[in-house]
Image 1 (cartoon, helix red, strand yellow):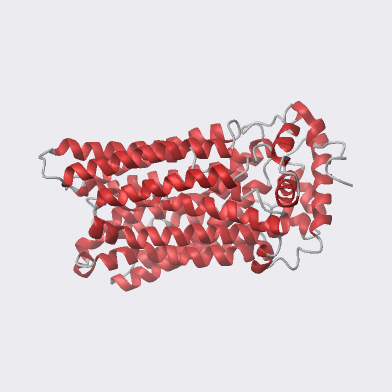
Image 2: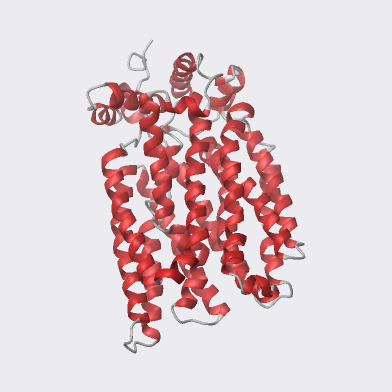
Length: 495
């Protein structure tokens, strides 16, 4: 039996696929709980930028070394690379739920180690542990949410995880400001991160495993029980048949899907190239340059007060969260591809503004504090452009473009690409700025964003509203077919 011949296939469903984000409290609760992993991701990203200002005050060695500052930031990324790479295998072998629980335990231990660190080197070890947890969570949360989501709202629900990331960044700046006058400022900033990890651990104990993972592992009764809480009876029957077909197609490969297998078939290479490319460009277009170092960038712009730098960074983080909400609204309406391209146009413009602001500041012309505010405006415009598109789109696309048997492995590999690129940016940004100047650095990032626009145009297909099985057919047709599969499949999803 083929997907097209199913009585409940997309081509015959029409208006039946009309579930909204708030029509099923169970799915919404599952999404928010899983998204706490994104909150941990975002909080750690944001909190270190503010904590670093005070770590330098306590440890003179850190204040004197750009390399140590970059290592404190980037050691979490090293851990995240390892956690993401191994997390894909853990997801496929032991399930999304167990992977989340493991990530919570590791993150909590890392947070407590950082809080108690007597010197920069123990702090760096704590950052490594936190990174391991964050990396595993970054793989697990999008896949867990996607596999429990109806296809017509899957993009928005997966993007909720990105909203949790940006909310975590916003929360981190609030915490940074709250502890600016407290003894042991940076220790509180880093230690409080254990709280949401502990909360998620206990909430996850109450949630089921992913239905698609259960079905792939031949635990069909449990899978159907979970699906019955998501779909009405008619839709449930369709989803059961689709799962059965997908399970039959993957039964030979599910036990042999290894990292190198991804490169043995043309359709998998195309899918991974598109997914990993999106993850790479998400980082190389500068987002974590802004989020990790925004207080430092604000100080470069002429604002010397730590508290003022943190306050302005809080505004940037708030815009990031607000922009992500816009992205959740648009991603299942405008589509992933169009949203990414529009986002990149705004990113390119804002990076030119940032580059111009810092060029004028470094010139011999006396321009005063206004240029500093111009730089902050450029940062805000960057976030307003990036957050609705290039923020959620790479994670949404990577959660849905891989076949069942490869979803954990490929998700882990693409997330590892994200973290590797993240590490490169974090470890080199301050050094590059010192070498060529802030203006030239942002101009270079603008050039990368232009390349990213071309990449999305050429290699990323539209997957809005497609079932997992339809997405798999899309890649097979791109690899071996006529090339018109995208338009045909999208037309099947229209009412």
